[in-house]
Length: 150
Ligand SMILES: Cc1cc2nc3c(=O)[nH]c(=O)nc-3n(C[C@H](O)[C@H](O)[C@H](O)COP(=O)(O)O)c2cc1C
Image (cartoon, rainbow, N blue to C red; front, side, top):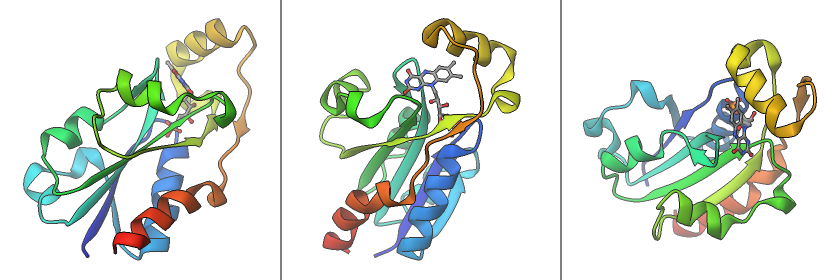
């Protein structure tokens, strides 16, 4: 099965997950900005990861518009996994039947930009500090699901 992992990442955490997943599946990974509709349909499965802003999984609408044969999505945010309502996230992003996974990212102030930092500080009511909550093991469930159909 030909698999492509696409990602949209502002500060690098989602890209890190995309790389880990592609490494495990021994497949290609690409920034979504370098993917065309023609590319996407060449694969049996596209796994897309997007960083989350205001509940929106970035890049999802773009990859969906490319109509890949099969699609799996993962969102990466700073919310602790235990506090994430996956069903609500799927509904809010109009994912329909597309399988959705959530992984914890982090915050990297210098790469977030002034506005990004201010928005996060408004939401968290704390000064934003460097934090990396990425965990390669978190991808196990997604990988298991992919390997079951592979
Ligand atoms: C403007 C802005 C809005 C955000 N909104 C959310 C959010 O709604 N939920 C969440 O869990 N994380 C949110 N985050 C945190 C990012 O999703 C998190 O830092 C993520 O790891 C960034 O991934 P990246 O490194 O791939 O860009 C927000 C960050 C910014 C800058």
